[in-house]
Image (cartoon, rainbow, N blue to C red; front, side, top):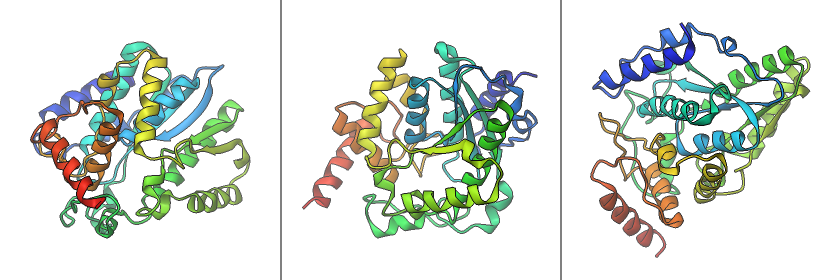
Length: 302
């Protein structure tokens, strides 16, 4: 069965699940290896971790606009906000239907066996996800220990395999940005440098794989602004793209976004700066979400 038929089956299954996808089984998707999809000669190759969030989704647009063929890896690690996996599938489906079929190969990798062994407020069964401004100390409770290193090891393995198979260089693209640095140590350049050094020390021909981090020194507003530019260049509808993303750490059972968790506050602030209405559905509507964040930011800046 073709991978895109499988993706449609995944979407249908997701829509039937009422418990925010907590019982969803990705075993069927994982029966289809990433190598099943033909790679297009003449295209630069990139591998990304496509969470389904705003940053990695914008990074996907960035790579398409730059002419890459993209291998997009999503991870199910027991996150409370696993609606993001559905959004990643929906976005790739939308892109396939709007001129980019064959340019993106997406695979979901399950790490659910780790769920009972990892302590974080973001993991199902963990404590409540904190609310407030994204620079506050309690946001450290949303750190998943060594998450990016786990993801990175898998991404590196896939990238090096593509490089060896095709005899070309492969870029690992990261959507980390300046807003992540204070809270998430594994989003800092120092971590990236050390991680890459370990990768090159531990693998033959690792110099075929390079890192690109286009958003490392900018914030979420700049990322969203780049997304707006990429949509224009790619002939895509901005709202149709971004309604297929999730940034909320506390979505409800229908997958609607909260507006009080730090990740949502940061996203809403970016849309306000850009002068756009966020196309995702918020639990109490956009106007309520907008007002809450405007008041929170005003108090924070006093």
